[in-house]
Amino acid sequence: MPKVEESSLRKLHPTQLTVGMIVVKDKAAHLAALPPAEQREFMQRHAMPAVLGPGGRLYITDHHHLGRAALDAGLATAFFRIDGDLSDCGLDDFWKRMEKNHWVHPLDENGVRHYCTRIPGQLDRLVDDVYRSIAGYVRDAGGYDKVPEAFAEFVWADYFRRTIAVEFVRDDFRAAVAQAMQLAKGHHARTLPGFNGN
Figure 1 (cartoon, rainbow, N blue to C red):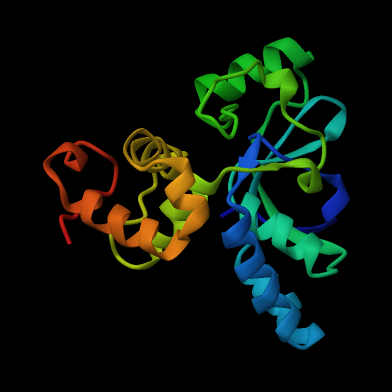
Figure 2 (cartoon, rainbow, N blue to C red):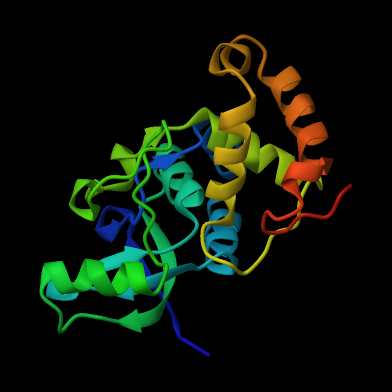
């Protein structure tokens, strides 16, 4: 099992462009309410999977919401474990291998794909995608199961993006989540990762 290590949050580089800021705010409030010792224990229990990249930089491949929330809550460090070492690669080859391993997901807040080089270098520069928040809320409510496949939440976010108007999401987030819960049970969702029909 990979060793869990500690790093400054500022040294952890994202592998995606977006987070759901509603989910981030919830997580940040949870972290901020914990005493420092419990914050540290929580972060240690939720170590971020990471890949060692060119120049020895650390690229996290999951838990972007937690990383951004920890920054917003004023934490200085987080814990990570190395799942891959691509430090011998040049930058172009690094991103190609990251894509081959499904360790990167460069979709913007509109679901549009970009070059990996557009991914920001810091967690606090990730942008808001409201459909990522909907996907997170639906998963947490049991609308679909958490699965080991990389970036399954993006697939659900895109499914909801195609069906629920963004104006509705912004006007009444809770009602949009309720609609998304119904959509998660539907016929069209059956091929999505983690579908459970509940």
